Amino acid sequence: MPAQPSAKRPRTPRHYAIIGAGMAGVACARTLQQAGHRVTLLEQADAPGGRTRAVQSACGSHDAGAQYFTVRDARFAQALATTPGLCRPWSVSTVRVLDGAGRVVSAAPPPGEPHWVAEPAMDALVARWATALTGLRTYFGVSRLSRSRGQWQVHAPDGDIAGFDAVLLALPVPQAQALLQASGIQTAWSGALAQVRMAPCWTLMLGFAQAVRPGLTTLGPQWNAARSTHHRIAWLARESSKPGRAQIERWTVQASPEWSAEHQNDSPQRVQDKLTRAFAEITGIRATPSDAQVLLWPHAQTQTPLGQPFVWDAAEGLGACGDWCLGHRLEDAFVSGLELALALCSNP
View (cartoon, rainbow, N blue to C red):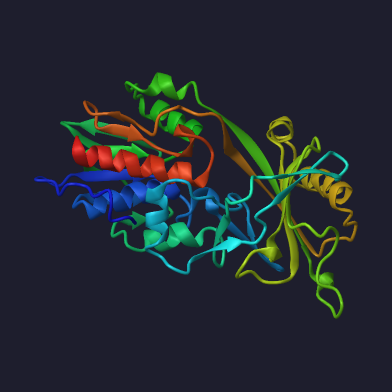
């Protein structure tokens, strides 16, 4: 994590509980820990990473959530420099934009903005930064919060943890709202969260082991990533084109927010069949995949952000951060977590 901007060493270290070990939670936790505070980072999954999660298949890994990241904030660049060699530019610096029939209509984003990926998968970056945390606990699903005599208690099915000076929620907005409601908590910023909108996303992951034979390296189109205006699909990426990945041909396909919302309650098999047909229409790849699976992200992409980097109620000792504060990019999550931690170090 960056050495600058540095946080002041506190006269009296505080104990923070951070719920959610995605990019925002880890950035916030490491900054607070470096400043001398005690941090307990709680994650319900088996590992940190959040929406940088990688899914393993018989053909190799898929970046099921965040596909890549860009670097626009100098503090993010400084943080990345602390783990040299972990992230590399993805050569797909120009992304194709397709119409609904798979025809190329333009290219974006503008030249000069590299697409970065972590190796061997996108979740490696958050995982590496999390190794410095002394208070990380995985498989810890928080059911509610309570506060007594100025101290917070975190309740979970497997046991409670008490003695926190403050609690920070590094969760998607709907999950943060559900936890506050389950806890009977109404904070000063609860109303602001109601303005945030997040969309779901169905993700399809396909592998084609049959492409691994002499004289055949890839199937279908020559491009490796594309945005699409197809009514079902918004994004396609050839995972095997990313640096440090297995070379077996495989694709990650992300459905559009509108289609995902409409089909959020469909069975995984039905979604897989529909998205596989759309994938074939766009790419021309009509071979039967040797491996296929789908994953639903209920709260994948921010449609209406909060418009400020974090929320914090000093009187209650309760705050929240996440990409949804500023947008939907991975860097937005980093900046949100960092700025909340810096604010707490300056004015706890």
